Image (cartoon, rainbow, N blue to C red; front, side, top):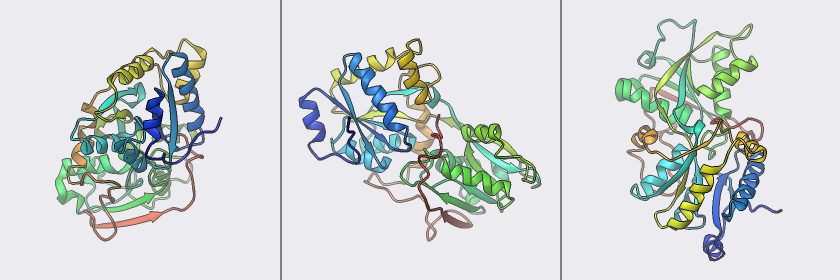
Length: 327
C-alpha cells in the first residue's frame, strides 16, 4: 500500500472528510513510523473508525497542515502542541497521549571532576552542551528551568555548545543528545542536558562512564513535563473526535496485535486521556515567540541569551539510526 509522504494538497482533508475519513499527520522521525501507523490504521479500521495517515518531514510543516485544514489530527510533540495552542488561542482540541508521555524528565549531566557543579545555579561560567534548538527535552525546557532558577543573569553567564541535529524533528531522534554525552565523556564541556530516557539507554549500553571517559553524574531538571499529544482544530467534528478517543482508549495489551503496535509506539500499558498541566513550562518558554508559521530559533549565533553560543551543525541523516527519544 502506498503511503503519502510530505504535505497534502489544500483539499486533502476536505476530500477525506467527504468520505468520513480522519486524516492524521505524523512526523517521519524514523523508518519505524510507517510500520507503527499502518498498524494503528488497521486497528482503527477494525474498531469501526476510518483513519488514514500522512507523513511529514518536520513538525513545523505538520503544524501548518493542521492549521490550514489539510489534516484533521496531528500527532505532535510538546513544542508543536504548545504552538498549536498559541495559534488557536488555546482553543485547539487535545485528544489523547501515551502513558510514557506523562511526567517526562530532563537531566543535567555534570562531570564529576568539575568542582562545585551540584545544580542549575552552578552553571555560571561553565561550558554547557545542549541538543538541537528545537529539542524540548535537551534545549528549550532545560534552559527555561535555568532561567527560572537564576533568571536571565544566569543564562548570560553560560557558554553554550549546541548540537543542531535533525532540525524539524523537535529532538525526536535524540541525535543531539548523543553528541552532548560524547562531548561530556571526552571532557570537552562541563555539563549538558539530555532526557532521562537517553541517559538510561547510554548507561545500559556502556556509552557513558566507561574506561578512559570522564565520569558523569545525572541531576534532575524540574519541573517534569508531558511529551506527545494528539491535536485537532476547534472545528474538528465532535462525533469524529469522540469516535477517535473511544477507539484509542479501548486499545489493549491483552490483544497480541494491538500490543505489538503499542509497544512499537513506546506505550507501557495504555493510552491516556489528554491533560494540559504538563505543558505549562513549554508555554512559558514560548511566551515571547510570535504565533506565526515556521517560527525562527529562540537563539541564533548573532542574537542569543548567553555569554557565548557555539552552534555545531552536524551533517548527515540520523533519524533512522536511533530510537525515538520519548519512548
